[in-house]
Amino acid sequence: MGNKTTKKLEQMADLSGLRVKALDLVDRPMLDTLRQRSDLVGLYLIGHAWAVIFAAMAVVYAFPNPLTFIIAVMVIGARQLGLAILMHDAAHNALMNTSWLNDRLSNWLCAYPIIAHTGAYRRYHMQHHARTQQDDDPDLVLSKPFPITRASFKRKMIRDLTGQTALQQRLDQFKTAIGPSDWPIGKRLAQFRHRLGAAMLAQLVIFAVCAALFHWSFYVLLWLLPFFTYQMAITRIRNIAEHAIVPDNNDAFRNARTTHANWLERIFLAPYWVNYHVEHHLLFYVPCYRLPALHKALADRGLVARMETATGYGEIIRRATNRDETSSPPGGKKTRSPRLRGTMGEGFSQT
Image (cartoon, rainbow, N blue to C red):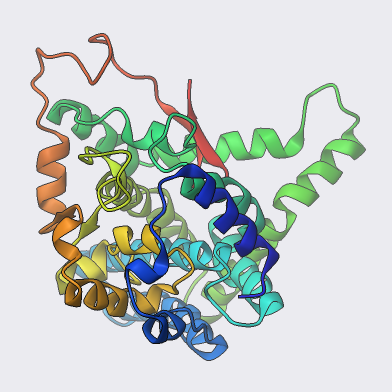
């Protein structure tokens, strides 16, 4: 790969004792094929995400009615998650072959529009791959509380779909970006420009494009609204599917989950092959568009039978919300768990 970040990640993951050697999974020719990255494919995937977003807006513009609006919110929210997935691939230096293109385009066309940063996400996400489902995994806070009750899940979905979760995350980001109140105004403005200046510029560009192509209100109704509502809900469901209630935290085949997604789930819930999560953890440098081929190669060797899998996202939700109201949560007292603070791009904590 020749990339210092990827080599560092490999070294960290090897230290965890949770890795499986690549050549125990696939043969050398297949591994060489799976590791190949393409600037053109990376550009195509980014272009595809934005084309779907603006096509959904165009449908509402041409046929304005409640049905097209609701479908557009769902489609756009799913592609906003798609931009996060492509940023994730770039954090693994797997979206494009050319390093500067990988980072620059993932920032400007994927991360900044969703108020994130590829480099910041990479630094946080490396720890997750190095210590998956261990006590020092920064993402353990996302999976450890499960299973939960249906009532708890319902409350979370209501917060997500009404924009409460996103509003809390954005407020936290802005508070961090402007710095402590005792800083001089010049220092606070410089801090904000450094942390969120590019993201705010990206929002202005999206606003201008919406106004030029359709109407300025499309930025609010068909960019911010999906981002603050539907995207948050499916991001939570994706997080649950990937690591919640896995059977063995110390088995690389079973401390993550691959979820079989039908065509509707791929459109509205799991874009860009994000459902192949065990495969991603086994060989994290494989581009997302090669994960189906990796899955097939593992199946040919009879290894898929060892993997933790689910038949669909509905199954995962049922399993993750099957705790009875009268029972205690995993390893804890029967109290309502504190809400998560943070963002996907910078990590989460409980408060």
